[in-house]
Image (cartoon, rainbow, N blue to C red; front, side):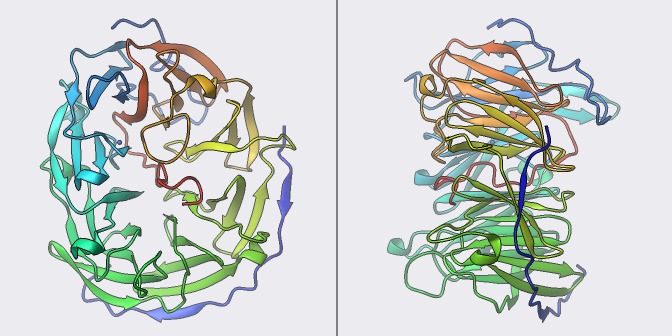
Length: 446
C-alpha cells in the first residue's frame, strides 16, 4: 500500500561557499531458519555465509557476549567475557568485527566475528577479541563507506578533550586506527569520516552541545584542521553522510554540508521549513553512502530530507495510529527502512519510493523484552543485516531472537537461546555498508 506523504515547503537554499585548500587530494541447537537460502529480489547474490549474531547477555553471569552462527543455527560454544558492561554494540564497516563500546570504562573492545574471505574461499574460525581501543567516554559511532569514526566525548572535569578514531576493518584487525585526532574541547559530539577528510564537531561554550563543524584533513596518523563551516548548528546532535553530503541536526533545523572535491558549501534548513514546531527538532539520522536522501528523526516524526533541494517530506508511517517509535534502521543496501513501534508492530518501508513494503503486527511483545543495554532508550534491541536482509529483535522475556525477512515481509522461526538477550550486532561477510549511527545514545532525539 502506498504510503501517504506530507509534502512540506521547499527550502530556498542559501549556500555558503567554503573553499578548503588542502595539501592532499582528497557492534545450543535452536531449530531452523531460512537465513542462508531465501532469494532476494534485488539480486545482490547469496553470501557464502549468512553471518553470526553477537549477543550481549542479561543473565547475571557478568558482562558476556555469546555468538550465534546463523548457518549452523546454533550458539557457538562458550562465551566472550567483556572487561565491562557494553554501552553499545556496533558492526564494523566491512562487517567482520563488532565493537563493544564501554563508555564509562573509556575503552572499546574489538570482537572478531571469525568470518572472512581468504583467497577464493571463506574462512570460519572461532570468534575472539582482536584488541582494545582507548579514549575518554566513547559514545557516537558513525559509518560511511569503508570507514567508521568513533567519537570520544572526553571529560572536561579531568581535562580530557574529545577525541576521534577513524577505523576500517583492516586497522581493526590489529586494534589500530587509520588516524586519530584530539579535539580542542570536551563535548558530546560526532564525527563524519569522508576519506582523507574528517568533519568533526566543536563547542565554543563552556558547557552544552557543540554548535560548530570543523574540517580536518588527514596527515599520516593524525589530522590537521583546515577550516570551520561558518554556519552555526546550535545544540548539534546527530549526523549522517552519503556520497556527496553530510548532515547535522541542530536545535533550530539541520545543517547540510556539500563536498565537491576540495570545495565545501553549507546551508541551513530551518525547523519551520522542515515542518517542525515548538520544541521539535531533528536529533538523529539514518543514512547510507548510496542513498540520495537522509532519514531524519524528530521524536516520533520521520522526515525524508533531500539535500539536493534542501527540502523535506514527512513519512506518515503511523497512518493515524497512536504509537511511538521504538527503534529504526536501514538494511545494508539501504533498500528498506525498518521502523519498530512501541506496541511491537514492525513496518518495512521501500526506500525507492518510500512506500510501505510490509506491516507486521505484533512482531514482538515489547513488554516481555527487557530494556536493551545499548543505551539508546529502546526497549527492543534490533540489528538489520544479512544477505538476504533480515531484522533481528532481542526478546529477553522469551529468551529468543525474533527474525524478520525484509524482502518477504514475513516472520521466520525465532532463534531460541538459553539466556535473555540484550544488545545485538551482526558480523559476517559483505561489501555493503550501513551508515546510520546505528543506535543513538540519548533516545531518538539524539
